Amino acid sequence: MAAFILAIDQGTTSTRAIVFDEDYRVKGVGKQEFPQHFPDSGWVEHEPEDIWHTTLETMQYALARAAVSPQDIAAIGITNQRETTLIWDRDTGKPIHRAIVWQDRRTSDRCATLRADGAEDMVREKTGLLLDPYFSGTKISWLLDNIEGARAAAEAGRLAFGTVDTFLLWRLTGGRVHATDATNASRTLVYDIAAGDWDDDLLRLFGVPRAILPDVRDSAADFGETDPDLFGVAIPIRGIAGDQHAATVGQSCFSPGMLKSTYGTGCFALLNTGDEIVRSSNRLLSTIAYRLDGKMTYALEGSIFMAGATVQWLRDGLRFFERSDQAGALADHADPNQNVYLVPAFTGLGAPWWDAEARGALFGMTRNTGPAEIARAALEAVCYQTHDLLEAMRRDWTGSSETVLRVDGGMVASDWTMQRLADLLNAPVDRPLVLETTALGAAWLAGHKAGVWPDMQGFSASWKRNRRFLPQMDDQTRQRKLAGWADAVRRTLTT
Ligand SMILES: Nc1ncnc2c1ncn2[C@@H]1O[C@H](COP(=O)(O)OP(=O)(O)O)[C@@H](O)[C@H]1O
Ligand SMILES: O=P(O)(O)OC[C@H](O)CO
Image 1 (cartoon, rainbow, N blue to C red):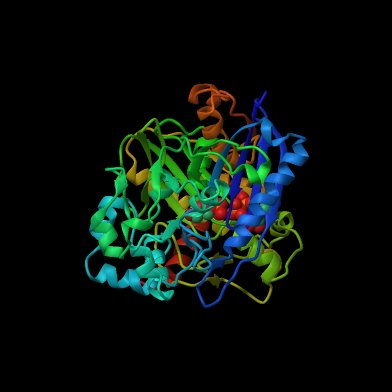
Image 2 (cartoon, protein in one colour; image 1 turned 120 degrees about the vertical axis):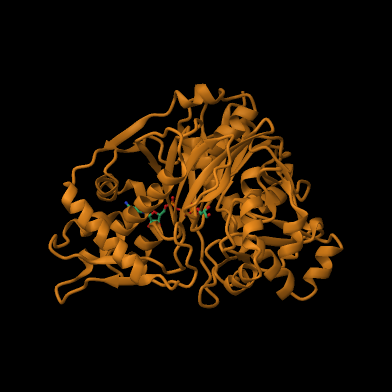
């Protein structure tokens, strides 16, 4: 009987496919990293064919590892790096350009012009987002304005736009389905999160023709079937959600006040705010947590651009160690008397600062400063930034909230970082047993829709903790460190 679920997790630095059994156990994993392209300062691109072939290969690998045949997959769930923008030809399926990645800052001048023209209030009101190059809106117009003939072809209905989920869905269904889910749509800057529809004023503002947009569905919905030529059978695709939204689901943050923070390339904290769109006074984002049975659940989001990516920089740029899992041990050797701070604004600063022009800075170095102190500063920066996000959330959210933070993502494998996080937040941090929470969330959306997995309550009951990190730092040290961080950020900001 077909009882396995396959989740595709197409992330910023790697593509993963995971086969889960009926009891949410991981039966097989395929993972492939792929190249990042930096064609200009602040530009970040992905080759669409890398996204596609790593997806197919990791799916095949995961099936082989699980010893499961494609006909035993009841449904596929897709989760993806968000905002990353692709446009392709509907006839050939060929992208008109590389994917412009969420970290890409090329449209920062365009955003500044729109802000100067007074467009931000309308954008905030309708989308819950800010006028920042992070989101898809200005990336779409950049592609239409910079690729010869693209705008005319788009207006004539010959081109299709999609975030990564939509591109993969198009390819997996053999070009039959052009759709996305509400969470991915909510990151485009052209989707009204209250009305639950693409918005004509926003489309006009960003110069996006309606003809290129996908159909928007629930996060657990019928997204068609895979082309039988790919796996020999047509496999139903029944779930789609942006990766941070899928992690919220995978962490069972289904009640208002529940909070998760995911540490992958970047770090993203989402607080479930139920059916209420909470408008932040602290420059957090309002977003759609998930849409099920036509009903929207919203979230407040804090987005940090560099988390695990800072560890990669220590590894590949500074060559401090060979493997990411050596970062914690190096940081542990740092001299406790040195107060070194790294503000990792390599691609600007995200929430709550939103300074696209800021660049990374190190403060407090002496002649004794070495790799250990810099590694500690890098890992602590992720913790300080989480602290800033949660403080902003506390100010925005008046409802009751959990005092425990649920964490996931590649970086939470670091015990050192999780302990420091609990210390600097002065709150417990829970690491779940299944660290592939993002994939699990996408799998639940698909598995539930396919009737194989239980409802929310049943799924929540299965959430298990691997370890709770309790704060151990004394108050005076914590306050001194937080003040030093606040000072370092102040000196880095450009506005
Ligand atoms: N033990 C570890 N300590 C610190 N960072 C780690 C560790 N293991 C992985 N990472 C970091 O986590 C990131 C990978 O997390 P992942 O969730 O796979 O990211 P993404 O989905 O964004 O590609 C990498 O940037 C890596 O440097
Ligand atoms: O690839 P990740 O896991 O760092 O996630 C990227 C985010 O979705 C960008 O908004």
